[in-house]
Image (tube, rainbow, N blue to C red):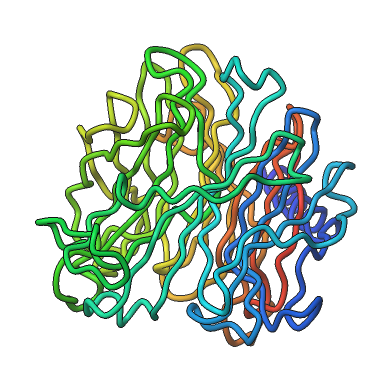
Length: 387
């Protein structure tokens, strides 16, 4: 028994070491004309290329300022990454929260069409929450594997409900949504069942006057069933303080949302389950198996085993610090997590956020790619895990 225990410990150490040795720096703060890079998102194209998105923050790591959405591409499974490409900007103001997704079900684009959803802002989040600014919602598309992009399309009037207009008098709703952000991470397209083809973007907003610990925050989603021509809103998840979130398709027309709990009263991920493709929410609960220090987390559908979706989740499995980035895999749609492996753990005595935001991609049938923020936001790195 003792020998078996030693073997397991050594094996887990080797898995963790393997991941660290194969890390590749994709974005490095203080380089390529940007003071900082944050908020990673990653997807794989139909030809196998990997697309890594981030916020290129020109003047530093502040959440508001001169921020652009940038992209790098890998054609060899993440070993090497090409030149930086600027995809979206808002003069010297904010552009962020990239939520990319491939539309693979539109007959008009048999090779697929790449969507990039993003937000712009004219004031800091604190001021927007006070009613002194506006966040808008846009998308762009590419039909040549991300080489060139369409003109931006503003969908704010369809998916946002700000009460008091700051820019355009057309914004006039009874609701009082204020701050607004996609994901962070990739958006999804549902590929099975009744809602096949639906493009779904998880999002969050604040409502009304600011409350302590972001209790004015709500999670929700918006979606299109006609390839971007029109959009609809989901119901809100009935959980105050629900913040940054991602969605994943389950079997049987279901959808799961994995959510950051900004209140911090329970240091666990919030889970919401929909039986109608993300339109409304039937079950909401905290997952005690997913501890969290109040940070973003990522989730991915890896396929099916029998009638159940195989899920991967990656987040900081720590209730105090942004650290101990852990990848978990479930074969029963999140009821249990069979495999757990530490992707990044700070050395003894380290101060700060060693790991933070992340996103996941299926590199191939045997490897999961993890794009994540590391070492006090100095780098966004890519690594893979064989499962």
